[in-house]
Image (tube, rainbow, N blue to C red):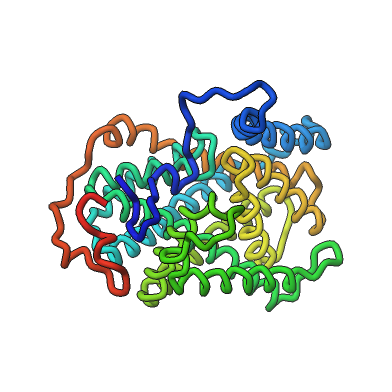
Length: 370
């Protein structure tokens, strides 16, 4: 079953870069074998190495004393803020599905969202939870291609939201970090992303993917998926604005939760710094070289907050609180997997080709079975 037409030949696993080669054997010292070994063990090695290095610099007695110092009420309130924030994620996904004319109940989307959160902690890849969400959604709707596209677009809009929030905050506040003015670097990165968006939005990957230089061809599936996502975004600007606002609402809740925990630790920080640091930490955690961003996020906490007078112990304690909150929020996904996730949801009735047509996209993308 192909993900898209336009001769892209995208498969769901290829789209998420999760192909597993089976039945192949390579010489002991071949490049292929070395690549497979690195691919399998790089992420755990990065996690263990970074966490080991960070905690080697921190007196463990001080770390646990600081963890015990924070009252349970502050941790619980921060947990509630993050839990409320999940509503915005579900609504953002629902907006995108409505643009694609997929009719799924909000309750089912909530269940799939928590299911994805849970599996993001189990699977050794940053997109494992997204794969699970897309898989169960495709089983509910019988639309594999559109289901994966909705999840990809949801993820991409979240990336745009954190990047532009960090850039705008750094520019308006003229924030410096360890004598480094941040906004020129973030503006440059944002301009590069906007340029890529414009290039991909013109439809180049869908129709001229064969013209790509050979070093970039392994990424053709992702480029075509980005092209389709950007067509949706460009043609439905109101939906784009709404999804970005929902993303910003979650960022503000996350910043408020951080503020509560920081005050409970006996520290203080201006809100504008949190609106900059949280997106930067999210961007660092999205780099696909560790398991679920573990190690990268903690390193980002230590680097960023140390410039604001926090010790490594305090930065790691704050990062640990946020990790524990996310882990607690993901636990309902385990129950959903056993009681709902293993069963097909209420299937949507087959939709006609007219129902599935999305303005500006080729109708054959949405034919039954995609």
